[in-house]
Image 1 (cartoon, rainbow, N blue to C red):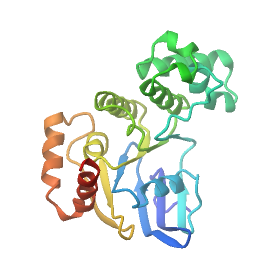
Image 2 (image 1 turned 90 degrees about the vertical axis):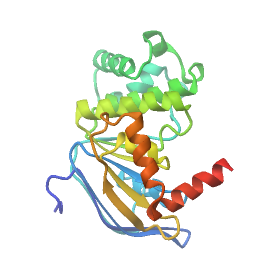
Image 3 (image 1 turned 180 degrees about the vertical axis):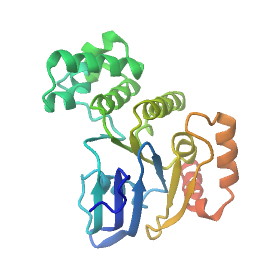
Image 4 (image 1 turned 120 degrees about the vertical axis):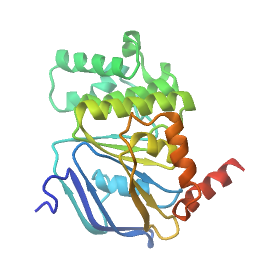
Length: 253
């Protein structure tokens, strides 16, 4: 029985280990309809493993996962397009697997491609002919094409430049508001989390524990760059974010 009837996804007392090393224990999550929750933390804190467990890609060693939706989609850090398919067929791949007629899935692929900023002539190209940013746009379009109830984003924009990252973030915000899907968004970038999410969960890399949870003021899409900067700047002095900012400083040093 679903412990929270209106929730789309519930993780209850979930724990996991790799090669005998405990990554995290006692993790709880309730993802509500239309809610975007960001998992934030430094490398090694277990945020990607939590996403994989939530999406059914990895079985948890302990705890339970409850899902109350028809279908989900995953957007990975790498686009993971099939190299032998055109952009159109990559975007429509999930629709084909579900038995959608060719004419309909091509029309949906064209519409999703347009929404993510791909041109009609890009649809006949193969992944090798696309730039890295275009491939990631196609990956987002592929996820949205199946009209998911829940989308799992695993640091999807890490490899693209800052300008395109903001475009893709805004695209996700607009799509979530339009389609009212729920999302779990993994990132190590606090500004990205503040930009796209309703709620934040901060993880520690020391023992995988949740060190903080908080609702982000305002709605995604209504926070301008100044508001995002001010929120991140005010949080940068808090102890719960120390690991995250220390990791960022080590990378930039």
